[in-house]
Amino acid sequence: MKIILGSGIVALLANKFIPGEKLLIPFKRSRFYTYNPPLDENYIITSSKIEEAVRDIGASRSVKHSRAFSIAGQLIFKDTPVASDPFASKVFGPEELRNPKMDCSIYDITARDVYMQLEQENLEEIKQFPVKYGDLINIDIDNHLVNTTESSIEYESLISCIPLYSLMELCGKEVNCQSRDVWYYHIITNNLDFEGADEVLVADPEIDFYRVTQVTKSPNSYLFECLKEILTPVPYFSAFLPDKFMLYNTTVVPNVIPSNQVSTLKLENENVYCIGKTAQWDNFMDLSSCINRIIRVGQR
Image 1 (cartoon, rainbow, N blue to C red):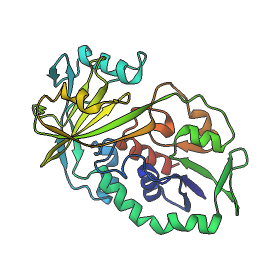
Image 2 (cartoon, helix red, strand yellow):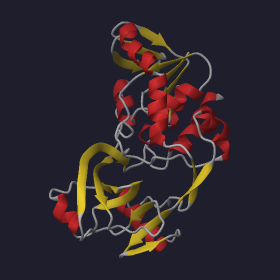
Image 3 (cartoon, rainbow, N blue to C red):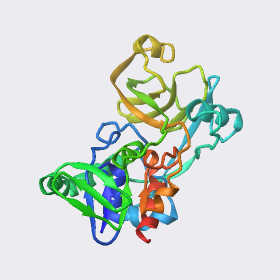
Image 4 (tube, one colour):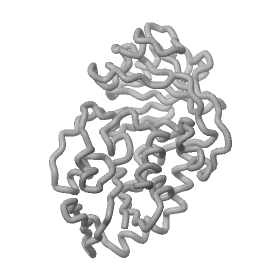
């Protein structure tokens, strides 16, 4: 039997697409897609490798998604080291210079809608796990056992979609996972001009936010993602939005951005497959990449 550990969007996708006998062990609801607007990328980048899978969750066509870098007050719509290098250094650290795709195609479904749909489809299974098995205690990867208060569940392979540090704690092993928290500020304003971009990546190191995404157009609202808490947000954002705006909501999520490299390859020798950005400790595992990895793991 295959065990899928987690109940966020990646785990629910794994539960849908991985074939054979399997058991979903819920962990926590999504840290990002339970919010509206969601706190992570609300799209799935198109890929020929996942076409059949995404059509099974409601995608029917592709649409354009445009990113731009912002540096020194200018928007740059191409990948250039002048902007991409300082952006990568600002967010991920000086050793990480892989660059995001700029203009790309995305599917005509939102990640949050997919999550809410899959959560509803799996709700009974999620509710029944603690009734049948009790609470999760630990994982014995040497003997391929998941131990709960009511049972020991033997598995053939374990697909972990929870943060790597949480998995290692369950396995009784130490891991050095360094990360950065992110503060989110949802702002309504008519005073931002993205010049056609849907998402702006802010490369200036002295500016506390690193990404701004337009989340609605009527009214115009934006999600600012910041690398530190802004103690007086209204005066702070007034410097960038000199006219009227409304700070609608704020929240913080810990351990969002992995800031060091940790390999999960040794776990695969024990038939443990990590899938997801914080599960693999890899900032560049977007949802499209996760679905592709789910498909490949399911074929093993």
